[in-house]
Image (cartoon, rainbow, N blue to C red; front, side):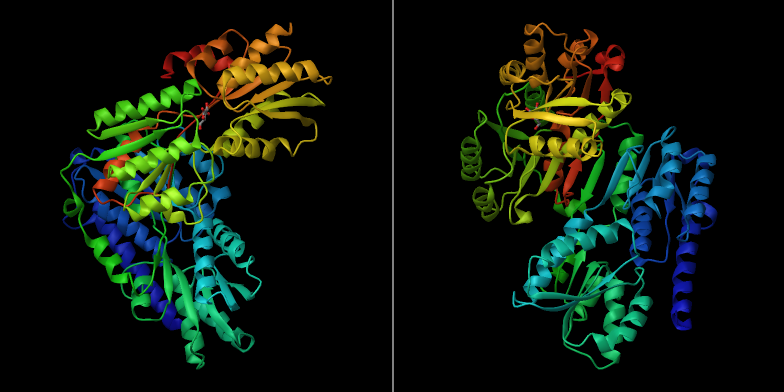
Length: 623
Ligand code: AHR
């Protein structure tokens, strides 16, 4: 690195360290007596070299300053895993009430995060850790940012194609993997686009500048340089223009404010565009306070929204960010139109009840239409909500596809659409404002992992899979998550996989047919929901077999009846799928009405309940 850059960097680090020092109450007006402090939060930052991380830290500081009874202690791991582990250990000895960590490396930080989580809540920011030993994850969807950037590059090249240079961050880091995978997914579909080269510049502007400088002679004809952060895009720009190479379009990611931040670079015409990658700093404090105040319904994952910034919307973007929430506040009762899937399962009844109760409690006028498991009825309901000019539309799409038209109509009417419980696939991501629900893939994996443990000593395990409604997200994803884990072990064989539409009566019928026609021994029934398992249990008993003993049964949902059947020894395990989404949905509606940007995904917190836990857990079941 050049010495001028080193000096610049040293200044930035010094300023940040000084400002944090003041904030930590070590000098200046912010000092509070310990009696005033109700909550002490530790924030372990991976490094303070990347401007994006400096911004994250600033956001945390700004949001925390709004609360007199809150103190945040910051540490900087300077990009070193061992140092970050030590930082967390030290924060724990300081007696922090909650840890916020943005890990330097997912794997290396997993054990210390799990250790902290045994005693206090932990919020993981940006880079995830392995497993689920934390309270809440907040971060961007890097794959989606990559796809958005890819689609934009295709558009910049006017679909005619051309040469593209990609500059990636730090090799192997999760955002790099996600962004490049998403970017390639789009670019690779376009045979006229030539990804001429892809280089790593460790997120650093100087490294990008040096590497592009060295490579410049091989870059003739490159029309677009896509860098995985704005900082590197700027470095590339400096190298190219210093060599008299002009006319290239630079696309970056981050969209930070301030001089030479992404937005400024777009306004100056240096970058063609940038994709805002929210840091989650502000949200981490908002949720930390909710967690510390033991507010119910804290999700497990919050995936933040990213959007494109060009010269056309840069100012609007800056102004929007400056608005206080007061300016957005509205004094009307929001009207929410909700198209209920139907009444196919106990899970659905609990889900519908939760939505109705939460709406009444939060002063939201709720109009519901019961759609009797019909996609057409859901489409009609959405159209009727548009006619009634509701403020927000929400629904659980019965199947994943076929929504483009009606959601375009909602968008043209200026009505946001929230998907709750099930998600959908549309060509234009902006048709869906946010998703609130479960990680169905993980539910499938959890069922499979439980089976791996249960059958660790067996050499061959024959599985019957009862799948949910064909084409619905839970059926697709519970199937793929299950297969992802089970498929790695040859002793597990899915001998039959048939749909029973999430219905008890169908579960009984399908299982009965299978038992009549199947000559192979059935060791396991994996059911995509509890209701189908209840039906299967009746069919198994009718065949003179003992469910839970002769055939092991694992299902998904975790309704109260599943716990009763586990206590009776007829069901072996239920993987939770939380239907109590009402509070989170109403919060999203109110946040939207108050002008707050909604995350792109809000994923609920869920567990796994084997038979042995049923007696203890049944008293806690709310549905
Ligand atoms: O979409 C959630 C699923 O739908 C539940 O697991 C199932 O019971 C249902 O009806």
